Image (cartoon, rainbow, N blue to C red):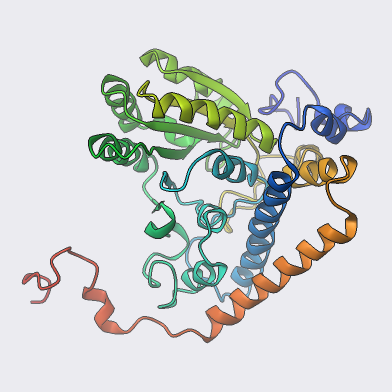
Length: 360
């Protein structure tokens, strides 16, 4: 138990007790390093970029330079880094509105992501999407979506297109633990299994949805079991360990590319911030939060890199400095970029450029 709630990452265990026994990060490091040095360094750099970028975004939101809604991914970085390393170029990604980390890991310029947060014309969605609706088709990111669960049938639809066009590619569709109560999820699951679509459904179970624990909102608390109703291969994954994420997604991708259909993965993870910047997160204790910080995925990778002599402290500090410069550059770029012009309101609405019914 942590903070009065069953532990969503390691059920039946106590994070503080693990940390006190010295088994937390050392357990991660000794659980098997079947990945090359280059992969660990890639994970470290990607996750640090996500973390530092969003740390800065949170500060800028507090300064009212970023406005509207803002949902930070801090704590959940392994749920993206491990997926990107397991999939192929050309695969498609779709998620909900906690969507800053995905394009960053896929290669979208931090400048374009920060400019989008500033609602500037140089943003990856031309300043029209903001925090919740980022897209970058060039890297296969099919967007963040603001309607809870709305991306689930769209993810199945993208996978249908990949199968129809015989591309050999797949779609990975993220959702939060709150979205599993949406009826559209069950319709999408049924169709995906019926047609054996190449889609990986991912529940990012951070325990609290918008602020209410899974234990208070769902009779089924092992959310991956929802897929079993459709005979869908389903499994829980420690979302605080990037190696576990990579391995689970690699297995699911192999099935999808072989024509065996979808998989449901429940990433058991944790967000260190509230649901959004307006959420004080009073529904959990400080002790619980600190428990999970002891399992931080970035620190786990850092520990492995250093204990396995893959790099030195100086090497990692150099990466940190590089990322610090990238983030500052993105802020400078966003602040000096122009806002969209009024005529942009009528663009990108219809595929037909001269569609006659936009203006009165």
